Length: 254
Image (cartoon, rainbow, N blue to C red; front, top):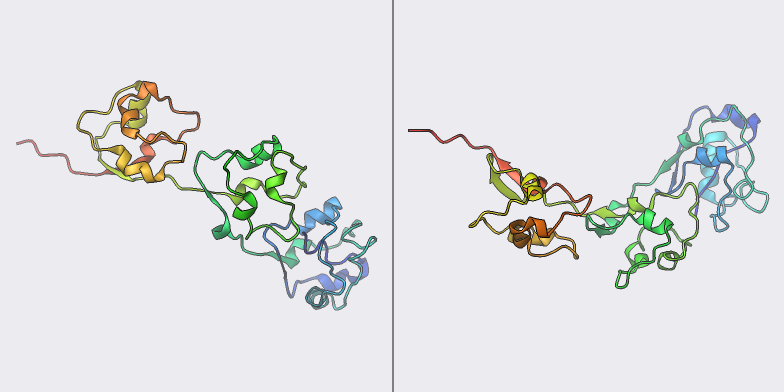
């Protein structure tokens, strides 16, 4: 999975490493190179080979003036890392993470469980859940284990593994979807106090139904007319966030 783990290890070559003339691009999910070096974390068995990689060796040569072919194999640095000299520069200066492919991340509703917490608890994907492998096919690296099978029978995540939750984009709340006057009552306060929606109020359902999560009650008007029958769950967004307060001049008194 990791594209590289180190730049150089011999102290005799450090003098050539003073300034990075060129950086090397690594995947967005790649752990920090210096962290890998400091913690002596070996790369995965399917790590790309580097000793005969022309692009990587050219990068090494541009920054050090020489090639280094001791990254691959059982005793190579990737699989059996050793400590760097104290004078070795920060490896992260020479590597550049690719842009995070946010547009390829799945879009979820705001009430979606925390995926990292669910995974670590061993929770299986619920019946009818879309295939996680299908949803993440454009962001998972080659050789990544099948995600669907991991849920319910999780393997321990490496220390450097990105938080699973960052790969899910939460669908934005419809903030400001309903324009109201400046003197409109506080909706959250009214709901918690059990004050019903007044007769003749416009339909709130019509304004927000396209933004509701699949398991959300659909008749918002009924909920607002009978708030004690529909207690808000912990963590529910503030209802006032759906309001767009219109600043109007106070009416003149004749």
